[in-house]
Length: 417
Image (cartoon, rainbow, N blue to C red; front, top):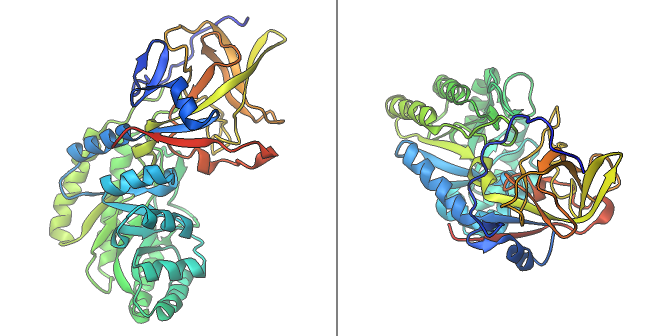
């Protein structure tokens, strides 16, 4: 047995779920019963009650009138999308497939926006015909959109996605600043706006998204203010008044040791100041924040069962029936530069303290199939359930589930939003 050694930085408390009789609970259901409901392991479970609670806290913190959109790329499961169609003010999609799910879930097309740097001509046509707002990523896309408008015999609703000349500091992923495939460089926007007018497209506003997964409130506030000021400057060349200004998101959740949950208060105060200025300088414009993982990430878990327990040269490995093919992000292969562990637990031994240092691996024939590297856990045996927290966003749909032809992960929703 590998003894628990020195204490590294710890994860933020994973206290969003109840525990009872040694079991992790979601929406009042013990983990072993969830496994039965899912039809076995591995599976994802999403607690809609926690999604609703997160949205209510946001509404209470953010200024009145600010619109909250759900970035569906974070989790396109139809049960999650259906809940957020009811809870959010709009849905942001990034493909025709996502658009179809949003519409099937009951989203109002007028409250859907469509972003992405490589929209195919059939996608543009489908979006125009549906009447959704298109966030245009390039001048070439404008020309193709004009052709789609002609075919649909209705004007496209257009917002220009702007690539600003600054980045969101300390972001997990930088989506703006410098050369980027996303958006139109800010210095090219005036010419693009003139072309929008020439093509007869229906201009509605701007979309700016400078980065994601940020836990520094001051960095988020600074980026939002800079985006707002840039939009005001660009509005001078707009062919009509700005009706919509999407300031993006970037709100992070704590994944790794040493990280803490985001403090909303300074962000909310900054957005209140922006909203007050917008009422004077962009009168009638709707301000939008676009959030994905912040709404759903902490509401989901990934659960895999221990198949084998083995010791190799003094180190314990828990070999599970799920791994990186289901949860690429937790394996460290979804953008991490230096691999760090997601918070893990033995979900049916929640009342037992850590007693050994071990590694949690999956069934794939690659050393990349690693869910937990040298983590401190209660002693686990075959049949036990390993839980990966913070798994409600960029999980199943962001993973190579066909790799090595293992079965896909199941997905279930529990609770009510």
